[in-house]
Image (cartoon, rainbow, N blue to C red; front, top):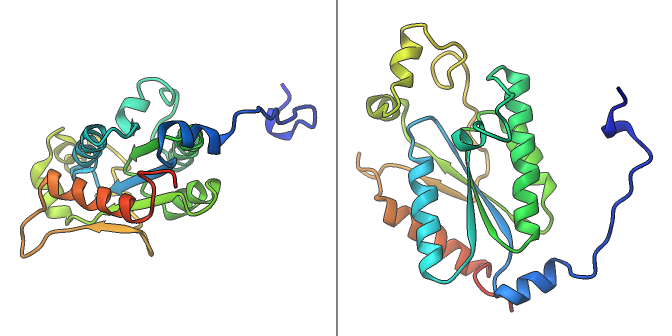
Length: 208
């Protein structure tokens, strides 16, 4: 079977309505907010809180949750390094489409490997990739363990679990970093407000 990736018989189809027209219609600028961190660090919590806050402001967003996507788009992938890379590549491509549509796409995934996140960043023009690092200590994430995954990993029932027997590579220059202050985690509302403030400052919440 021929690989489409190597085909020379496919061509890009331009359409008369482009990103600028779509952004003007909904009065916002498309971008990708990529939330990365260990399991239990609060990625999905922040994603949902941010989506709700944007909704109250009349701004369109869509959450791409890593677990949810493995029920459909990525259900054929496992957790080996090459599968994780393909998982992130697919999500990056979908996020790029949402941003091109003018939406604020909120991607919430562990995305443990720096090169995979950087590859997603490179997909988007004009610095429209906003990396949010949930910099929470492993001890806190493991204590939460709402899904019971750390317990299974410690018992050897899950192999290649990020933070236990597979590495997490933290961002080197993320746009936003969430962390404890004096041992206290910021509330979901406070974290969402921080991201919204960044989006407002950078002009994503209006199209002027």
